[in-house]
Length: 323
Image (cartoon, rainbow, N blue to C red; front, side, top):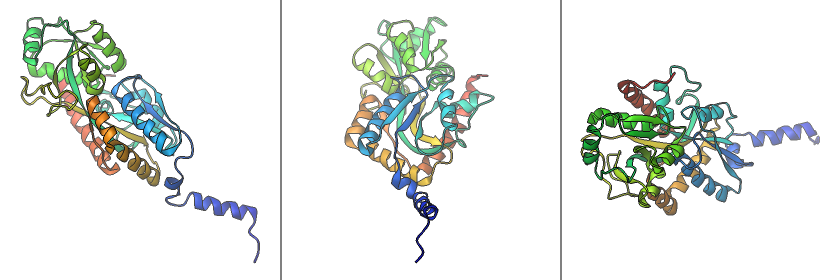
C-alpha cells in the first residue's frame, strides 16, 4: 500500500478537526472573552463574572470579562458583532439592546440578525429606590410628596434610553408626577451619586441595588415586576403599592456574533444552563435580586425578537429618541 503523503495526512487531520461536531468536542482550547457593555459593578458585570468563574473552573480555560461601556451599551455590542464567530468572544446581552432599535434612527447592529443567542441567564426587576434622606417610606407616599414638588426631584439612570430611564418615564406617565432625569454612563456612577445624595431616587436593576437596600444605605419603595422578588420579599410590587397594572421587567443573557458553529452554541448552552441551575448559583442570583432563567437558543432568539417589538412601542409612547 502506498504511504500517505504528508499533505494527505494533514488533510485527513483537518477533515477530522472541522467535521460536524468537532468544534463542540474541542471547544474551548484557548481563553474566552465575555464583553460587558457597562462599567464594572453593575448587574451585567455581576452576572458575567459569576458565570465566567464557573466556566473557568469547569473548562480549565480562562474566561475574561472585558468591560466596554458607552453609547447606551452600543460600543460593546459593536465590538462583538465585528468579532470572529468562533465562540471565543461572547456578549452579555441585556434589555437595552432590544430597546436601542426603537431609540436610534441608525444603529450599527441588528439585535435579531447580528447575534447568535445562547441562553437567557436571569430576569431582573427594577427597584424604585430613594435616598434615606427623602421623607417617604411607601410608593403612595412618594407620589404625594413628588406631586407637591413638580420638577424638584432628580432621578439617576444608566443613560438615555436605558431600561431604568424608560421605567421611570413610564412611572411618571402613570402617576402624573414630574421628575428631572439625570443620565449617567452606566449603572455604577448612577448608583454612586444616589448613595451620596446627589440625586433623590433611581429605578435600579435589582442586583445593583439589593446590597445597598439591605445595608440601609437606600430605601426600597417598590419593585417593577409583577411579583415580589426573593431578595427583598418585604418590598411590595409597584402595582400592589399604588400604581395598578404597572410592570417593567428585563433580562440578561449570553450571545455571540452571528454565525457561530451550532456545536459550540450547544456546548455553551448546556454549560451555562447547568451552572445557572446549580443550587448555589440559583441562590446567589436570587439573593442578588435576579430570577434565574434559562432557555434553548431557539427560545432565546424568539424572546429577543418579541422584546424588540415590545420596547419599540414603549419608546414610541414615551417620545424618547436618541440620534
